[in-house]
Amino acid sequence: MISIKNPKQIEKMRKAGALLYEVLEKLKAAVKPGITTVALDSYAEELIRRNHATPSFLGYQGFPASICASIDETVVHGIPSDKVVLKEGQILSVDCGLILDGWQSDSAFTVGVGEICDEKQRLIEVTERCFFEGVRHAVKGGRVGDIGHAVQSLAESHGYGVIRDLTGHGIGRNMHEDPNVPNFGEKGRGVRLRSGMTIAVEPMISMGDWRIEILDDGWSCVTQDKSPSSHYEHTILIQEGLPELLSYPDFSWEEYFKKTGESQ
Image (cartoon, rainbow, N blue to C red; front, side, top):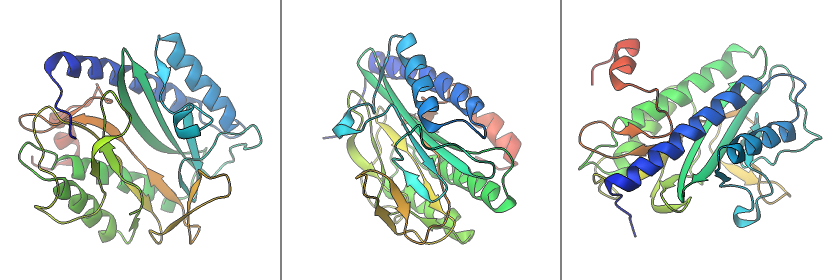
């Protein structure tokens, strides 16, 4: 069942999103060669709990950490470890969620560790563009398929693979709610979008093939061809006009279109 949020509930999700944005900006600044992924996880949990919130991921279906820390060919769900030390030239995807006053927010970014090659930098940039291209279609009266089609079209125009076994999702009091939000699809197909819906849109894009496999830890999803992948996500609100990015409070569509030179 799809949950439509009222203004009071949306404001609570807005506060959760603002806190998550602050947490992830601090985590992003902490990513550097030589740091362990478990150190990033501990830092994230400290920041979340310090602000009277709870890590969404910790213990969720048995997941053992507060963030997913996924390196290079690991698409998502990488488990932080004190044995995993970040190295120059890698790319790291960090996915994190929190619960504040009973309401969830979910967001992810991918960043280079130190200096990275042009090919990896381009992958990160295109993945972010895929997110914004998809989210532009997340409008009242549209369809979930409109989002996925936009993501897929842009990614594949660059020769990249769109991960198909993992999707975005509705979000609210629970981390995963209806509907599923695939990163591929057809225009005009799927669930119709309504004002007050809150969803997490999260392109997962591979430099190579889209097929994945799960490692023996039961969580880590890696590309079968071992090609690097990138992940970008925000929690958004469907409303009149373009959506609000609840986990990106500094974002402005006006500034985005000015920067990109695109029209709405």
